[in-house]
Image 1 (cartoon, rainbow, N blue to C red):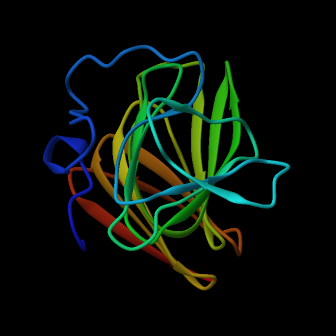
Image 2 (tube, rainbow, N blue to C red):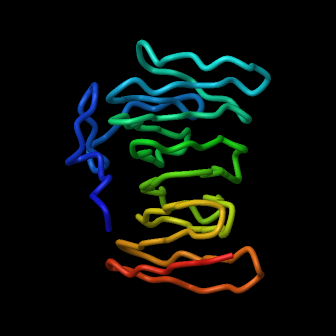
Length: 178
């Protein structure tokens, strides 16, 4: 791995610890950041630099972290994600029964709450990682390669070509190629 994204060791404003109780949010929100991340709204063409917290996100909104940037996201169900520097992702959906993120480039760490009736997915150009109640990272290197690392629990990974693997932690890595 190229660095630990767990919020308990990552600098943030304010400090975030995935294992400490976090304030509930009504919908996906940026609750901490470092650097100068930007948000592009679903129907917008301009990127806005994050300034102040929390920053609510809606389906279709994209977040870009840039060099030295990092973003901490809290979801309605208590799940959390950390998006590393020079990453780009879009919140595809946040519903009562599912959360879907589209990671175009970069690395994301996720701590997913244990709810049996909710699906949490991270899509990349080459793979889809689906989980319930676990901790994992997904990294999209480019349109040809992705990697999933699991720290606890199980993650179902489906490649762009239809191949599927069940990856289990602690600290197991699965690389996928297009």
